[in-house]
Image (cartoon, rainbow, N blue to C red; front, top):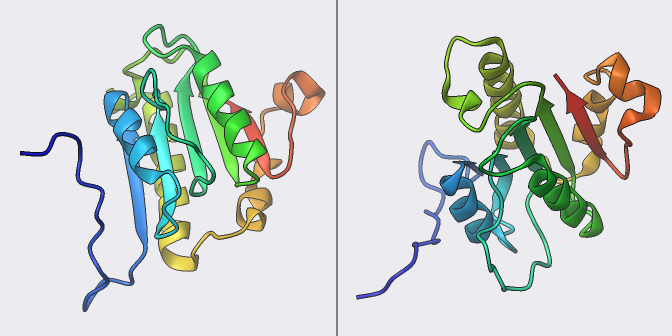
Length: 170
């Protein structure tokens, strides 16, 4: 019996275009991030309030186009973890967006019907839909929405934009 998670992805079949998007929330984000490292067949990765598992020691040479969704007051996985993951993705040269939801606690994404949850769901769906439709293999797709979606507070320079990445305060 083997422990761990199966990371094999299904081959494209009739009715499937072969593109894969991965979404992980909290502990699921830890599994999703670890399973997505170096996987060229993953076209989009969305991590919500969670990153690599504690003590993750495998070399990270590449990540899929990445959307990080974080609550600003998450105490389980503090925002500093999201910012560090954003820096890691930037250093690897991949497209990354960090969406920060003001006042969002650790479980805000799961609280359907709230403004923050609805906006976060739409952001995740947009990234995955683009990846499934167009491949999202270059920074340009993310860059087209980064400045327009920033709040005035972020535009004033409170947060910085680097190489196709963004911090969006909601």
